[in-house]
Amino acid sequence: MIKKTFLGLMALSLFAVSCSNDDDNNTSTTSDLTLNLQGLEALGNDYVYEGWIIVDGQPVSTGTFSSVSFPQTFPVSTAQLENATTFVLSIEPAIDPDPAPAATKLLAGDFSGNVANVNSDNIVVGSGSTISTLGASTGKYILATPTDMDDTNEASGVWFLDNTNAPNLVAGLSLPTLADGWKYEGWVVFDGTPISTGTFTSADSADDNATTSLFKGDAGNGPGYPGEDYLQNAPAGLSFPTDLKGRTVVISVEPYPDNSSAPFTLKPLAHMVPANAMDHTVIDMGDGPVETIMGSVTRN
Image (cartoon, helix red, strand yellow):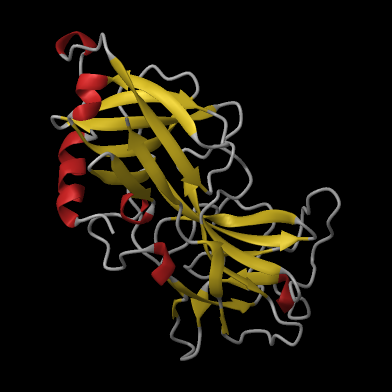
């Protein structure tokens, strides 16, 4: 677990406007920095991963990469590498006019000797969050279609809320507050094709597509929680309304801005809707397939 003291350093240093100047750090001699990371996925053509070491409180780039095959080794100034306290991995635009790290930081860890054990837990999750890791997330949802006047297609919508004490509704998701550069996104997987329910940062308010969704009915935007009705304008190959029983519901963590229309690697919650699921009845989610990304970074 990355210590809170490290998070304070990150807040002061990683958002610095300028990076260390090679001319001031005697960079004529280089040493190897080797990354051995697990769980990364390719970002596509528009984004790359970029490594950073923190030297005297300032971020110094160790290079960009697109391949997610490891180990990978990068030449880095020996003087800077010897004085580095922390390693950070960010997601950057492939064409990036800004020399500083982007807000979307995925992995971090402090060096202990020549090794930094890095993970996503305390860099994706915000420092002020009351839930410390994505692995501590819990979720509930119901099947319902509140955005039309037809009560015969209730299994064609999913809403991340708890109506146990209806008419009083509460959030169905208990999630960490994310750091800058990240958002949550809900999904339903239709025969291998994930269709978004919308992105959000707060589990107790409507998601970002509440007023712009093409799938909802014409009777309103739905309750003030993340969710979606799949009632019209189905993508090619699908037919709406449908029945979500037997399909998988997922909550992912997405870079913002997003690198892809598909779900990102981090998926803390998932659940296959039971075949006997009842409409308007709370269903518990389970752990997702990827709650954290980790690896090691070695200097030598």
